[in-house]
Length: 145
Image (cartoon, rainbow, N blue to C red; front, side):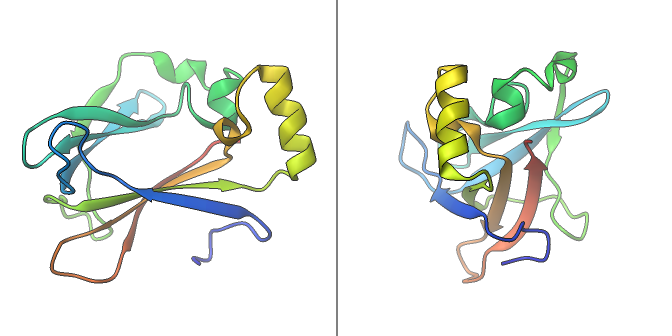
């Protein structure tokens, strides 16, 4: 656990694989709008298939409720940098989600918004590692509520 994780939250994480070639190494791109970060895209290092990993304007609690529509302005994409402001090469990616809303309240919100409860995560994060390193590194996060 990192110091920025909220107490009492539930977490779930998934390791990414390419839907085209099943590769597990990606180049990450950070999407930015004029007012800040807006998402993450991943491009497979093996076959160049590219897809959206996270979009702040549609994903998570704030995205579902339209609270971040102001980020739908023109977005730019740039290679994601690691902790020491060094561009990341091809990395394995773990995408994580946290839920700090009590389950009963989460179910009520999901019913109201006509989405699944898992769509209402309140925090999204990316961990990365290279094939030759065992430890995952905290790379990027976004508060979604």
